[in-house]
Amino acid sequence: MQTAVGLIGLGLMGKPMALNLLRAGFVVTVWNRTRTRADEVLRAGAQWAESPREVAAESDVVVTIVSDPPALEQVLWGERGVLAGLRPGSVLVDSSTVSPALARRAAEACASRGADFLDAPVTGGTWGAEKGELVFMVGGQAEVLQRVESVLAAMGRRWFLLGPHGAGQTVKLAMNAILALQVQALAEALALVAAAGIPAERLLEVLASSMARAPVLDIKGPLMLQRNFAPSFPLRLMHKDLSLALELAGQLGLPLPATAAARETYSAAKGLVRGGDVDYCAVVRFWENAAAAAERPPEPARGA
Image (cartoon, rainbow, N blue to C red; front, side, top):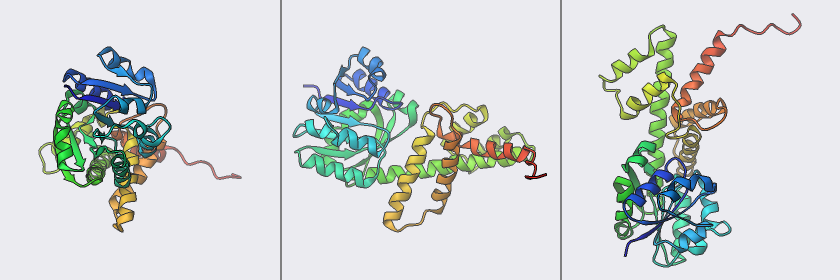
């Protein structure tokens, strides 16, 4: 009998993940706070549930991928939440990026209902989700992971068991801190060469042939030059993840000065966003705003 999979959260990542599950032949039940976002998935053959609880009741494996800790708490513990419908022997796989402490709390709640839990945040961006090439960072038990490997294989190309519950979230936060710092460093360097009168693309040419080259810079650099900020990983979520990393570091008594500085920059860039989501490479707007401010004539003194 084919595994019945539930997927909750049909945003930039969740929708292509659901479509790949359907292509792999799984029976898929979905729920999203805004139903219209499910239209494409429903046309592809998914079943709609009226609540997260109903998704859980219909599924052997439930995958959640929502925006932040409050959203996950609402989906799991809220009225008609997942935990109210979770079947004994089923597995909840959370691919959101939240705190390790919340992952451990979810694992305990699942265990009290006779179900299993894996924290399994992902990396790969929207293109990875669309191609089924995500990488899962997993916290939990090896036996539970083995039971859901066919489900993960429909959505991703690799998964790493990193330790007990919360380990997946810890590694994801550490990795996102690195990505945020790399992109911020590139944006800062682009601003420096541009201010010196050198075309910014020349820096990218040199980076491509140097030890400073990194895949994220190969992808985000051209987007910065083109001012193409279509969200693959929204800036607001990167800002959230930096905050979660600093929260974890505070609990561990570990200073993260570079991460703290990056959060301030991303916070300022987030404040410049008008309208919908933008990708986190839009942090370059921080320096654009600073350059524009430097070019403005000083305001006349009061009383002059």
